[in-house]
Every structure is written in C-alpha cells, then in structure tokens.
Image 1 (cartoon, rainbow, N blue to C red):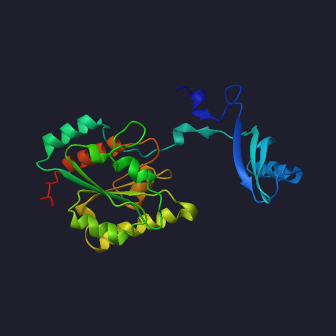
Image 2 (image 1 turned 120 degrees about the vertical axis):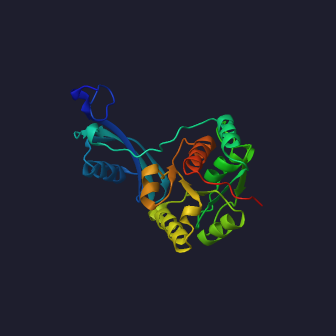
Image 3 (image 1 turned 135 degrees about the vertical axis):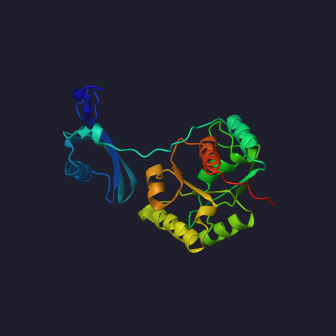
Length: 253
C-alpha cells in the first residue's frame, strides 16, 4: 500500500471526503427540538455540518434519528493491531476427516448461554443440527458429541456438566451484553475454572456479537468468535488446538 493510503478516513462521494452516516435514539419526542438535539449530539461527536436525513417517533417520549455529516480526522492503518485466530478454517467434511485421523474416540463439545442470558440463537447456530446460514451445527458432525445446555445456565452448572460429560471443549455464548455484564460473567467462569484447578482440562471458546479473539485472550479464553463465524470455524480451531497440544482423548460416557 502506498504511503498516501496509510492515512485514511471514511468516504461517501469521493475518496477520503470524510462523509459518515450514523443513527441513534434520544429520550425526547420527535419534533423540531428533537432534531436540533440530534444535530448537537453529532457536533459533540466531532461530526461537521450534520444534517438529519431521517427522524421518527419511537413513542411519546423517545425518537430515532439518522444523521449525515463529515469527519475531518484520519487514522493511520499502520498503527492498528488485530488479534486473530491462528488456525486454518476447515469445512465440515475436513473437520470430520481430521478427527478420524487424529483421535481414537469422539470429542465432546458442551455449550450454553450463561448467566442471565436467555438468548440461545448464538449457541443454537453453532451446536444445533440445522445450524445457521447453510452451515450445519456440531450435532451433525461425525466424531463430535454436541451437548447444548440452552440459556440462563450459571457458570457452576456449566462446569459441573462439563466434568460430568468429560467434555473436551466448552462453548459459551453471550448475546445480552448491556453494561458489559458479559465481561463479568466470562471473567467469573475463568476464575471458577482456575479455583477448581480445571483450566487446563478444557479448551474454552466464547462467541457473540461483541466478542472477538483479542477480548477472549485478554479474559483468559483460548479463542473468541464474533459474527459471521460458524460451527466449522469453531470446530476447526478446537480440533487443531487439541492435536497441537497432543491431548489424549478421554474415555467417553
């Protein structure tokens, strides 16, 4: 990439013109005062010449706005650092062959949406047989015994079940993340594993819309997967890590 393109900013009509669009809600009625408040909010964000291109009422005292404007600041992409999963993503068929060639018995993956999170769409997409978006879930994989505990599973129960089923891999999905409650919940699970001297017994993977690999490693997990990741991505990482660590498959129930 040329030196000229190391510094970039958003564009809408022409390259690097700084044009951006953003949306947000305000706790006030949708009227002229609400639109003025929305523009003022955009100005405080560093957006120049903001204009309200759409506004609508959410209820008597709440409103929604779409703002169009310009930013002047740039970012140096050479200063950016991204932590990514360092494993080859295989297809379902490749994962199944990999398991057959490297392990003597089937592998146990146990997963849940933990804490107060009742949303199971994430864990279901990875584990349930039908999967998501054309990618089958782990229940359909040969060589994998997938156990989906569902939603609102507390950390203690998840660990208890992982031990009971002699799991190789623990999957945790976090969908509800208001006020960073997922950080506390995920941190508590790692602390529980360490307190029970079980951290090295499992490969532990987290996923969710606000999850990435960098956050996962920071919290003490083996990997983290965000949006647009599927069962084959998760399984690929887990089986390769097990092989690389030369883990011996345990007798299964």
